[in-house]
Figure 1 (tube, rainbow, N blue to C red):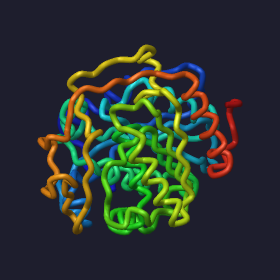
Figure 2 (cartoon, rainbow, N blue to C red; figure 1 turned 45 degrees about the horizontal axis):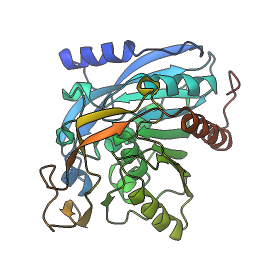
Figure 3 (cartoon, helix red, strand yellow; figure 1 turned 180 degrees about the vertical axis):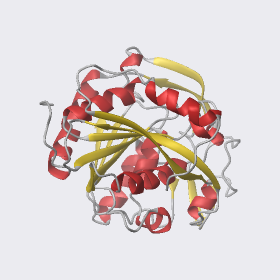
Length: 331
């Protein structure tokens, strides 16, 4: 799983991880940047179950909430299209305060990507799902982590990959069969506009989605429809919708609604997988492309303190019941 590390991209990755701004309320017993091998797959390769993409060494930042030799619960965090920023650091510190180790995965730097906000075609939509499975395999073998108590949480692009990482089909094709699997899945404001084959057959672990009704980047409506399909199949899934709340509602840096006029959005798109590896635009019945007319530009993002605090309260309850940490500080 570990690969040799060469070249400037990895050095830049280390600098990115080390320079994440920190919220100073949580004590960190140990921090380690860990390189690991992943695979850059196109959506077609991923959906076909191929592991024959371009090998790449990415890295994650592991932080432990306290010293000792006991195995700790952990959360793997998948960043949004903007990459690793202040909101990830806030969540990282919050989880540490609960007694949960954190592993922040950087899916961009080693692939030569700064962000995908204005050009989502730079990286397959399911690439971070592959990274998540490989990160789970990696930290499951870490002596400080309890492999049976690892949660996956992601934001926007990372949120959709968190959501679909719960699919049994994808797990069988790409996940490490020796790993216990994720104990819970927490997608924040994911895009749910794709309909994959067998996407209603998901893990028995809880799935908790948090979304805003005013989100014009990744609208909530397709997620609501998907959740109803999952519930009909008996999945342990819940969607919490916050009235009037925008995309990226947990990022304090955007205290006021902020317009991103060039940001790509698939809010008016819908596509379906007709055979393994083939995603078709529902309207045209042709292979989906980011050049399709349904792909638009211009979105609004904005912080909402109430939605963020309600999300934290719900996740704290989920952490208590599924990860069972020993808190280092009251949440």
